[in-house]
Image 1: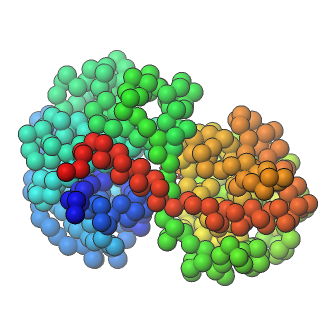
Image 2 (image 1 turned 90 degrees about the horizontal axis):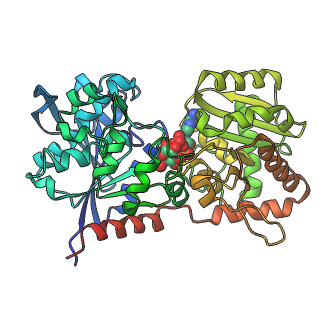
Image 3 (image 1 turned 90 degrees about the vertical axis):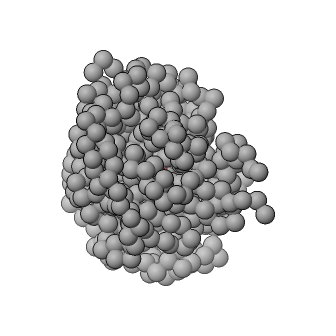
Length: 487
Ligand code: ADP
Ligand code: GLC
């Protein structure tokens, strides 16, 4: 039998320990999809104070050492706390100076030293544990100094032989700060602070830029986003850099963990269901959702759901622009999210203006999210940009029709509804334009109210659609194989 691949995942969040968005979901689901006959997987994460005690209690101390960091070579404590869950090993990096505040992020000024430390400590931990990975799979800017440390400070240590993959989950966040700040904390060589690597402009350095330059492979979370980020409109200032490195760049679409998101076993629902009984069961879940949120209880109303970080990325300006036109006596809207005050307040306003028809639940609530995915009829994701997007995948798995803008992973995962052909998963529009979103919502309403059998067919089709990690995990395996051919 071929030797198992050893893969180390390095990233700043991972469900169920700590999650602020889709990165946390991917750090949970992809290792689980990979582990088994082909791979051993370790996930390296910071031991944040905000990780629930019930997980901390299960962790086992694996050792500790001092590590130097900064230009002055100051030394810092590195503890290793370990946990195993379903075959995946999680190694938490313990250091109270860096990880005792934040949820888990604080502000960029403190986060830069924190993630310099984390990136370097991840490599040191792998050496300390004498577990030499074939591949170190790094995620987002917080882990993007790993490829640089690996090829400089660690090149002649065991971990120096590993190959690195850097996955871009969201190019909006890059880890940009003044050159002296990053020079001081990273302790990296001066020549890396040149334009081809870390230098961003006269005064600032960019951690993601450096990682992209030094990783053996760069991936992002959909094929469309891989193309989009090479253009000025989506490249967040890194489009030229990404075009230059494009031979090493590819897109692999995310999946979801179909065990975590399974309407047939989901205990958070009023009633479990599969594709066969979805149409009836979703009505019961709708009533439960309406009851829970204080909305008028009526299974005949069309419920639009939105579960999201409330930031401009998510297309909320479009939703705001058409809110009054979207609402009518047959429509209800449920929003679950936190984020920018302007969006939180706008949705609070609509809740009081449309009492009984709109609920703005301004909070982060995993449990309520499940009931919304099940109880809503349609689900809004009109994003300005969307590297992949998981909420439209979860919505489909729960038989809820997504209404999405054709960008990034939304374009790659939601096929437009075509009644005559009996095809499609939801309603889509292309340009970032509020009237186009309104058209898509109206199209959804027309099908829902006037062609219910076609709608119900779509519900079943969506629930049967493969949104799992199976085929994408195979693509990651193939990529790993290209980097380290199997013996
Ligand atoms: P992003 O990573 O850009 O936030 P994704 O669609 O990839 O977007 O992932 C969002 C994840 O976070 C989904 O699992 C979604 O259910 C969850 N989520 C977002 N906001 C909330 C919230 N307020 N309460 C519960 N879950 C949320
Ligand atoms: C990012 C993106 C989102 C993607 C997630 C997981 O947060 O905004 O589109 O689904 O990462 O890859």
